[in-house]
Length: 143
Image (cartoon, rainbow, N blue to C red):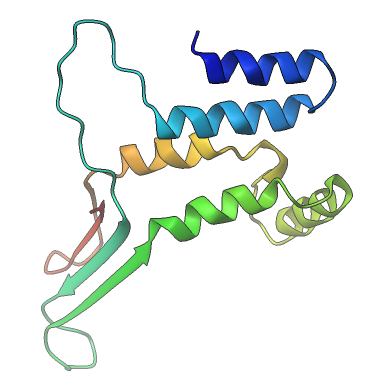
């Protein structure tokens, strides 16, 4: 166990911070100093900075011809959004979750963690999505 992690756990034991604050601090440490397994000299993959969605099509029903949509979303926006949820009071999160559920979005913001976003980003390394049009393609990936 490294010294910084030990200090966080000591602050938690002394009641200086809450368990949620300790969890956020430990997650921040893990992001800053990823631990490599002993003896593993593997090269770290560059941290992606954008989520890109590319849609290509050959012909539309309106006869406009081929087209392309290329959307680039900063992943920092997603990461910041997760960090902001930790600042929202629990009563407000409960109301937001209820409204999201009524709108058909089954997401529980109280369960959203930074690690979840990082796992999602890792899984989006390269995703191809099938569409009904054989002449169209959709790609979602991180870069």
